[in-house]
Image 1 (tube, rainbow, N blue to C red):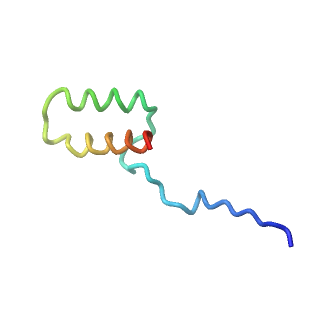
Image 2: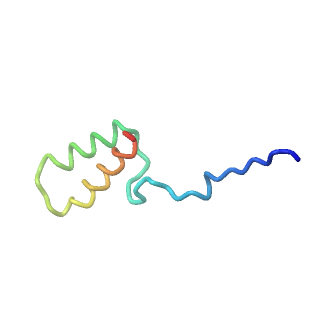
Length: 59
């Protein structure tokens, strides 16, 4: 019986945050630096999403 290959990549959920646009690691780091330059509690979600995006790249 021949082996059957199954591509499961389209079935697995993404581990990247959905609300962060496609950015290179350098672009993401630059956005994060700009977001934390001036303390603004309204940007906490953005900061958390960018950190999450970078954490996925590190893993």
